[in-house]
Length: 268
Image (cartoon, helix red, strand yellow):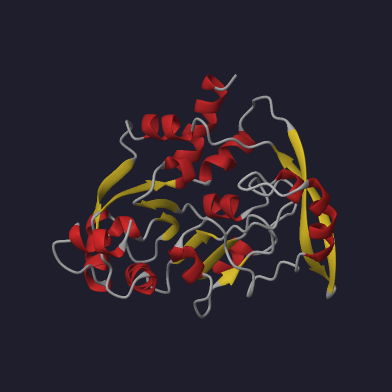
């Protein structure tokens, strides 16, 4: 959405103060732990852009709460790249030359403006996985992003599982369940057939750049929208409007537990 279109869909400027009010009306409270997926353009014309959204979220949960966002990168094996792919003869050169993942430096890819801004905020911490990192700010930030495993990186040794342990919530701001990363934790937990895939990325090991290989399950988002729609038929979801965006707030434990059973019933 262009800035002109965002202005046209907004009756008034969307401000940090109005966003904070909308978030409280939705049900976000002081001390909450929120895993947030967002679209800045869906919120309307936000005065100040992404920082205003982050300021509003911080204002509502306060330093007693915690904000978490996925800060994934493109730091994966080029043999698997498809959007766009690269020539086969480039692959080894890319593996040898790609700069190492560094939490404070490496940009996000495909995450949107808000997570990219959030990762640079003072006192925001970021996990060490080169491909599927998460950033967090607040009281539980360190415990959520520390010790993010290379292998099975959206499973039990991931920030997703730490949010589950802290009984956090998922907040969708202008986005659907197709990008709801907590459903990947349910994939790992569900008793269903799972293929294992190999991947890799550049990291720093004792200050030296290495290409680290790891394995995880073959994840899929193909049925996430259908799963999310079924979950929203329960009484466990709070829906409303934040800015001009549809917003959905849900307890992550209840979502993941529901999704585990859903996968075991519906995935072949």
